Image (cartoon, rainbow over all chains, first blue to last red; front, side, top):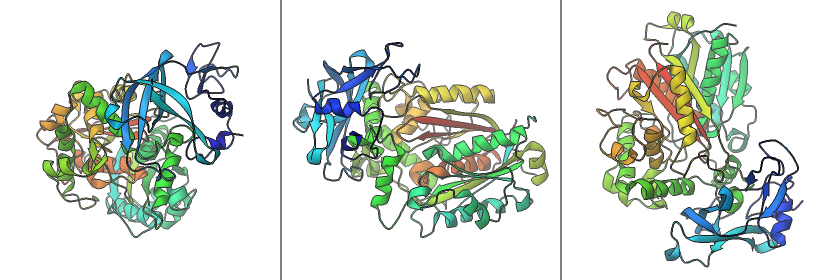
Length: 137
Length: 393
């Protein structure tokens, strides 16, 4: 349980990575690492895709990332009509983690530049929903 | 088991666009056009039917449509009767599977039909369904649903790294709309000028209205069989399936397999396999149909298919190198930008154009074309599919 509250719109209620939502509610954006392979995953994976081990470790995505590229979404998919326009960005974090997230509304569009410093933080949304977003690092 | 050479012997499609018809109606029209293309073939000789469609379960409320279509077009399949779905590459997946079945002897004559009915009375249905075609748990949750934003990021990456310009993106649209202007089945038959493309309203900058493929209703159909049967059916030159590949290295916007969004390593991986299997190189290809879902896509495809150097796709298309008279005429029937894109039908529409080009009967004919390449990408750029067709096996 918990996964049904993730993001703006969700279609999945139960998932093996539901702990991700529990951590978000505690203020942490978490990824997983396979202790056997040493590979880190974001989005988190409850089982290592490489060796299929279920004994993965959770760790917090800390530190600053870099904005690789971004786009302004003028036409959102169904469920996002009230959000548009919003800005989606791809951030690159330590250990080769790539994260796609919305840029916080408090970043002025003229301040957005490729290469700018980012942090990823939990985002409480209306009606008990929860997600994550990028803020200036 | 047998190891037979496989030929494509007939192609058909209906008028694409906003259609007042069901997906089964559209499949029937395309199939009829395809039957008419090979009069010597009796329907009883077709032992397999594959139907490529991604949205029929939602927008047409029809799961397992293959038997419905088989009955509607008068087929009684005995080797295979199945729907398949790889979104934008469904038609090409169907042709790959039909090729394998025929080559191995598990089937003799297979019809591959594909297409969608996407316009519904409730327009939101199509947009809502977009979330089903991506990894909605992660990409969807962030509002990454419709494709333009992702390809906008790809375009910006290419512009930043290689100096690609908005004029170069626009040149793709001008060319493909010109090619489609004489295609009676295309959704759009109106040419557009460079100025019109440049000034069009933004969809996801730098992509404007004419940089994006539309939403389309339509179906297409082809028939494949083994070489001996193909020789019996007509005196037209034989067109063989020479090489195939379908690559998937990741499934969402994160975990991108290349160095950056404009580095399509999964396309290069597919191209390497298809070219090796076909025993040819990019310079041997006379005509190409590549997946111009967005103008930037065709530019990167020219690079990562090996038709020009990495980073030189912009000048390549702007100088007419992938137009008639250039190195590799591309999207000769108008591509997705003119024809539209009823997902499961697109690979089949490309195969039909390849058949016509290699038999010398295309509307806009590349003189003496003997080798052709068709390419699709799927979803948020998570799969690449290639078919190489040739006049020799």
